[in-house]
Structure formats: C-alpha cells, structure tokens
Image 1 (cartoon, rainbow, N blue to C red):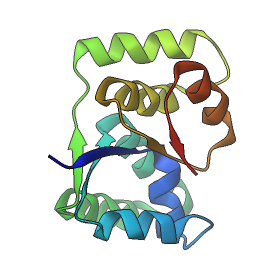
Image 2 (cartoon, one colour):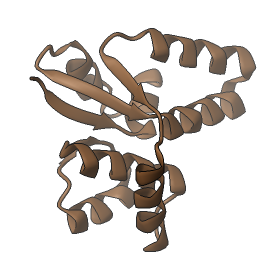
Image 3 (spheres, rainbow, N blue to C red):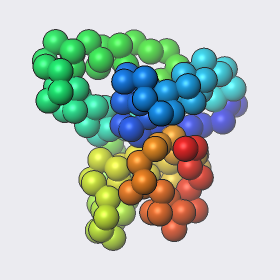
Length: 132
C-alpha cells in the first residue's frame, strides 16, 4: 500500500499558476509510491477561485482535468468528516474548506500538502504533518 498524501486547494492552485511549490506538487503527482487525496470541498474551492479569476470555461477545464487525473482521488464528504471539519473550524482562524483538508489528512493519517500559513499552526496542534 502506498503512503497517503492530502492536497489542499493551495497545492493545486500553486501547480496551476506555476507558483511556489508547483515542483513539489508535480513531483508528488508523478511519484508512484503515494496515493493523493483531495476533499470534494477543496475541489469546490478550486472551482470557485478559478471561476472568479478566469471565468467559467477555465474553471470547467480545471475541474475536468482534476477528475481525469489518475494520480488524484477526490473524496466525498461523509457526515463524520463534515463533523470533524466543523469542529476544526470552530477553533477559529481557518476557512471551512481548509478545515476539510485538515480533517481528511487527520482521518487518513496523512501529511497535508499546502503553502497556506493559516493551516500550518492548526496542523501542528493536531499532530498533522505538513509538506510545505
């Protein structure tokens, strides 16, 4: 079994925009020893951000490519994960979508790939490893 890794929206957006961290994300997507997961809530966050920045066609293309990417598994949000994310969000300081990324990483015992400084402190408090 491969090691699980969770992406948040920041990781995917860094890749799309060839921003800081894009090489790390690309490396993980091509590394066969990891299974990469993304919460559907974070997929929605990516859609929203691309839609607001680049329009509907770009947002649809990004989401279509994400769902076709064999290295990436997009997971639905069952009630237990929704409750965990709500609990994390109640601590304050994180967006609801970020709370889903963190809840999924905690659930899977997986590191979270992000460059989002807001997540870093919460992840440390929860004992979730960060790949920066």
